[in-house]
Length: 126
Image (cartoon, rainbow, N blue to C red):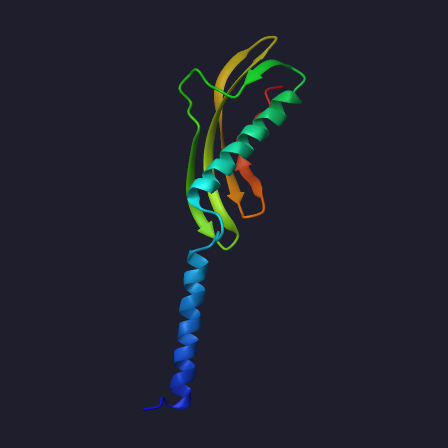
């Protein structure tokens, strides 16, 4: 038995809506969770290095922490824009007056082609 034309069109429309909804929920295609976490952590390490290497008051620094701050990354959302990842990255630095053993917190948007810092703590000690 053939469906009446209006029912067939309605069924096609419903299938299209469901497919589009599922595609939106599965955003960030092409980037798995593990890859997104690693790329975001690497990008934050690069961000810290750039900030501290360019800081005129910094006499020394390193990408580790002795105060218990650990490298962590958590996928918080997948959208059509990509995968959002929250990261914590340890580092230490010393200036003429201070020594600090701290960590940064940042949020990254990871896509198949790029990693972009969309927010986070300021890593400039000067």
